[in-house]
Length: 184
Image (cartoon, rainbow, N blue to C red; front, side):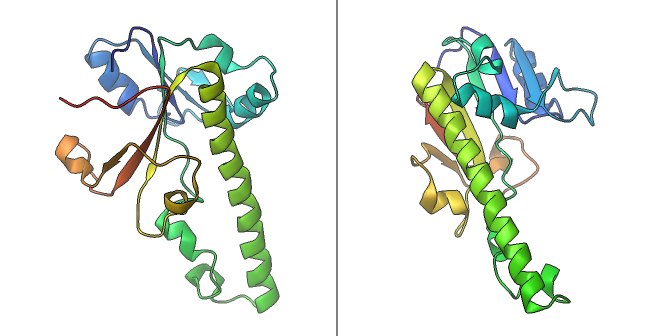
């Protein structure tokens, strides 16, 4: 894939990917609600930006063009395999709670997951509708939520990220919108 514009790293405050893209000669900026590493170029509530863009209002998406690439590390807290266990009564976080308290915690988690799931779908919809190139990254595991419940299948599943310089071997999936993976 040829990138003629800027690379926008969503939900990435560490600067890790932005700085690697810069080393390769790309203009790259990162966006996150936090700046714990003093690296975030745009401290912004991306969830709010997704909501208003989906509603047709002015947003950060208006500053992105079709030559750019959005690489979104969408928060996986409600989608990853370990999160799935928190929807069960036997989860260790609930071991000292009564049945009603466990149930209330699980129902709140269901509500939160539905909210974040809708945001991920809206983000992809915005990109598709506007013709923006987007790659969304998220964990890929046996019982991860997105594996069986997302709007499209991932185009790339990386089973061993250590082969590409990462510290973690964990499986990761990449969903491509308005672009295709290239290899080589």
